[in-house]
Amino acid sequence: MPEFTEAPTQPRQRHDPNDNTIYIGKKSVMNYVIAVVTQFNNGASSVKAKARGRTISALVDVTQIVKNRFIPTLKTEDINLSTEELKSEDGRMTKVSSMEVTMTK
View 1 (cartoon, rainbow, N blue to C red):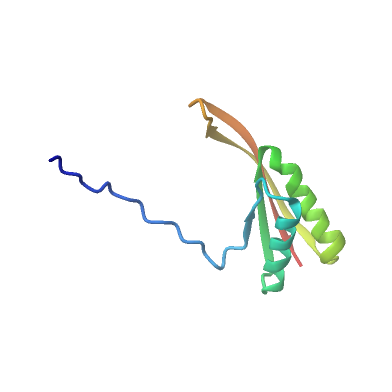
View 2 (cartoon, rainbow, N blue to C red):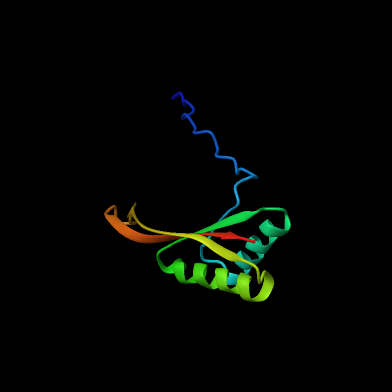
């Protein structure tokens, strides 16, 4: 009978409760709006939101909805634009635009 050895596993990355970063993905914009507002309601002085590729427009929507509907005193402190290289499904490296917005009350 063949012997099976357990493959080494990487330690799981635990979410840092002090990390106020929201990663914008494929969910509805309101899910991310609620996440940002919740971070501020829980005492965060600033919240970062990050998006790549097609979700950048959702990031802009999130910041504007939070400011116009929920937190009128919201300020956009910093906006970082960059390009990241990712491996596509077919194994090629592709460049994807990314955006990070830092918001404060």
